[in-house]
Image (cartoon, rainbow, N blue to C red; front, side, top):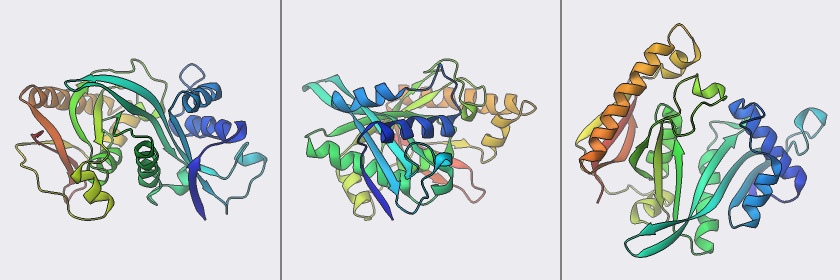
Length: 259
């Protein structure tokens, strides 16, 4: 039985910290401490957990072994033509390895949306690695985010094993929480078709290339080529409006007019 709700108490927040370390492999300098999770909640952010009541809680599973996923966001304010706009920056989403590929990541994101809208917050953002095919599929295809900004080496040097030693390039996901596109996806209705002008491919083998020193230069070459293509497309007023996988499993970003 999986339940999803805001984390409460130090044990649940500490479980988020430990799952963060297990997921990204951060060293002490990069890991976000428990007090920062607590502060996020206190200043209007979110720390939402997914809990599996069937998980046996013991010394091996940590302070709250039933936590199998979490999403953490921070509050922000951005300038818009209509004036200051409050929003949430979703900084982390993690699911325990034993519970991946079950849709928990999407459930956590939809709960973030529900909670944000309950407070009148209509916009969320986050960054994600454009080389991560699964993340892109979740963010764009299943949740309906758009992207029109490419941030080069956004976090600088990272100790995360998932980064594979590459620069921390990121796309900025923009999630309009009550847009017709997002509401259609939540209701599992087809979203309106978008005009596609450019496609940018991510090879299905990119994770393997990043993981090995022998092939890391190959992964870097893909990153640099895609960086150039994204920046050129964004400078022309295009945005990432779709994402698909081809018959070989490669990820395909679909770019077209934003409006």
